[in-house]
Length: 498
Ligand code: BES
Ligand code: MN
Ligand code: ZN
Image 1 (cartoon, rainbow, N blue to C red):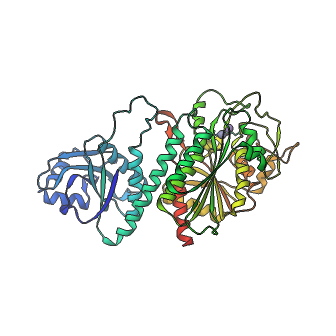
Image 2 (tube, rainbow, N blue to C red; image 1 turned 90 degrees about the vertical axis):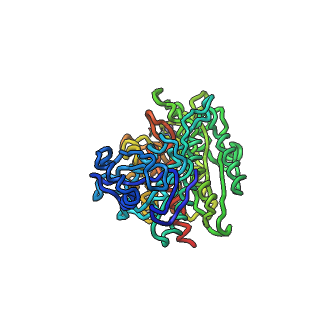
Image 3 (cartoon, protein in one colour; image 1 turned 135 degrees about the horizontal axis):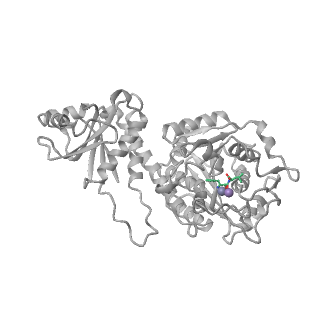
């Protein structure tokens, strides 16, 4: 897919297809008026016919419109002009893409002045369109015997802007969103892969490939290395599995090596059966997505490396399966984490925190400026926030705020939950320093409380992506989130530090 930015007004342009907005009811945008004029009222005639009145999610494809240099014109409903907002913009872009994918159109021009500027600037509109376009042509057919024959013909989108001052910001937004989309595609592929293929070893190979392509440093620690480091908590999750666990580390240096890095830690449970605390059978297949935190860390690393952002970034991925077996950890087992704290494992299905805690302790050796962990950690988060919003908890309110803003900017939103000390009591154990579960209440917060016991030495935030990393139902599949939020955050960090 190609994107480009052009400067100028519609009458001077040519191409296979122009997309032109219509407000409700039958109100022409500026670009529609210009095209109407050079076509001697053709568009107005169509509007009078009543075939399109401007409602959102409607469109009308016109062929051979006399007097223009476009082969086709796609009229697209924008809804009521006063009500136009971000949400409607995104809906309009999706309905435009749907309409275009049904045609044989290969290249298309969008006039950004059609979309009222009151909410967002053109660079934002370009970012969102680039990401939506690449998402709309994403297919995961590598495991089908024959590729599906439903590929779109769309190859190029040109954005037409009308003031030259915006050009630099728009071009930068285009580059950044392309990198985000590439990162999301990697994250989606890893999430969608079957769990017999996407094992901890496979994730390690993917990380090494990424390192080769982008000249990163990759280190893969195996179970022996982890034993030497005292990662008894991580290893307790891997005990039931035939697949060896891996601790995957990638290092990217966009600044001198002395600069403190930002560390991303991603939960890489390549399949979560629950272990001895076995999950019910229904929809257990979806637990192949339990490595989505790891996938999003790799996707973000790709985006950052592609953009050569001036930051230092370290990715740490604890990767394992969570399986039941004669060797598996049992409820009641007590293990010793790398930090020295002992943990009573009351439920083997609360395994994410058990692997993350050792990875978070390992992160200390990088003297990190900031550590962010990303994990499909709790079903409770899905209950609290649904599939729209990522749960955010942090020991640093400024960091939390910066992440919330990045999510807002990237249309990949998070919402903060409290991490007050009072919640810590729920993790009391009679037999060890800490239990791995709280009670039935506040499950997302108690999971973060558990992690917070291991993050006292640095500024830290936790993203619970249990609801946002994938979609279930008919559109079952990985979403590529929160690569946009994370990359946006890192772009903002790179600006702040340069
Ligand atoms: N991977 C799951 C969390 C999850 C559940 C993600 C549903 C997406 C959808 C995690 O390992 C888990 O099993 N958590 C338990 C914790 C509980 C035992 C305290 C949960 O949420 O039920
Ligand atoms: Mn689990
Ligand atoms: Zn899990």
